[in-house]
Amino acid sequence: MQTYGQSARRRLSLLEPRVNHLLAIRAFVRVAESGSFTRAADHLGMPRSTVSKLVADLEQHLGVKLMQRTTRKAVVTPEGADYYASVMPIVLDLDETEERVRGKRLTPRGRLRVDVPSSFAKHFLIDRLPDFRRRYPELQLELGMSDRTIDIVGEGVDCAIRVGELRDTSLIARRLFTATTALAASPSYLAHKGRPLTAEDLRQGHDLVGYFFAATSRTVPIQLEKDGVKTQLAQFAILANESSGHIDMMAAGLGIGQSILPMMQPFINDGRLVTLLDDWLQPSMDYHLIYPANRHQNGRLRAFVDWIVAAAVVN
Image (tube, rainbow, N blue to C red; front, side):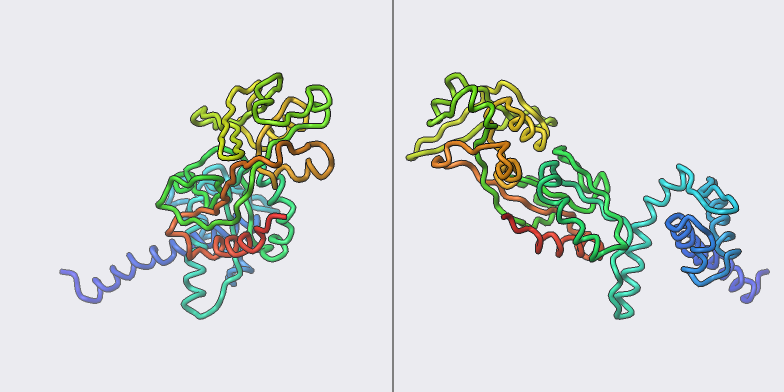
């Protein structure tokens, strides 16, 4: 018959591995980030031998090798990299929660995944990122640059920039700015084909450069309006499914296209593009920062949201 003391000791023996399991995960994360058991031990304030045993116990628990150990460094295995990507957000959220409970503000650190359209990255965001890095040097920024519409939740992305109409109402959206579009072409193209003066001129002897969405193959028409008369043009000589490349093709002299004016501004400033039909109304596009509702308390995301909202001033 089991005594109360034996029962209590048995419960403690079951509890201790659970407590050590969380500590082992923390130890593994620090070793993976620093590449060294010694540096991880210094960070955690415990002996190197303890950190090594915690990681070894975690590997035994999982039944996989997480680290390749040498005398100089520790390198994560492919399985370790996958495990790190899964547990790192949990560890960071736990750290932030603990610091908040203690009444302290934790410096944002760890990985932040942001997805942006290519032209936004190239002509707006990248030049401003050194300021973000100076403010938050402990954040590792992973910047996805394409016009592909990703599944933010499914692909584990923290936030994304979207242009135009928002369709997913389950996400939190912060409007950054509204940008106008403009019709433009290169000086070399205009010297060869002539400068259009009306929307109808575009139908007569001009090559149009279009943009289409790769996922749906939907083509975006050129839209113009004057004196209440609206014109749409969708007969393109060449199309691109990437916004930065679309502008590059216009600058290369392939034809006349309509794109977002602030993203074309560097080309206009250095004379590679000339705007056309400036007295015609052309569409405007809203830029939004979107992210899942359950991540709004994440310190890493909060830092980026506050920074980009302040930085989003279109010149």
